[in-house]
Length: 85
Image (cartoon, rainbow, N blue to C red; front, side, top):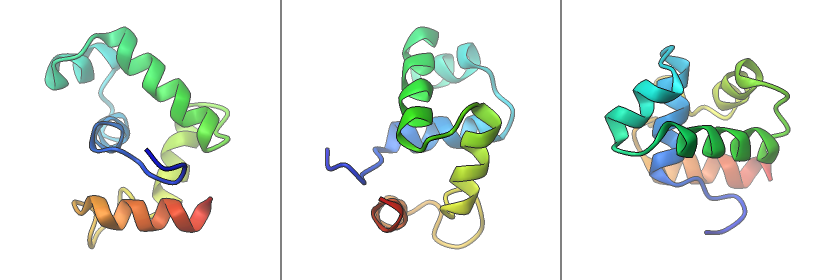
């Protein structure tokens, strides 16, 4: 994975966090363990220099990953992340 690239699972996790789901609920929906969700969230927080989950959501919003438009398009997410790197 390239440094600016966000995979579909991470994008889905960020969106589910934004909707208020907890780690266990996200894990169940994605078929992964809640600890895996926690690790991925932690990695995203480090990658985006977000001190917490709220800041992670704010950063995702800044990058245009949660708003209207091409949000469902992984290529769009990649473009936005590459621009921010």
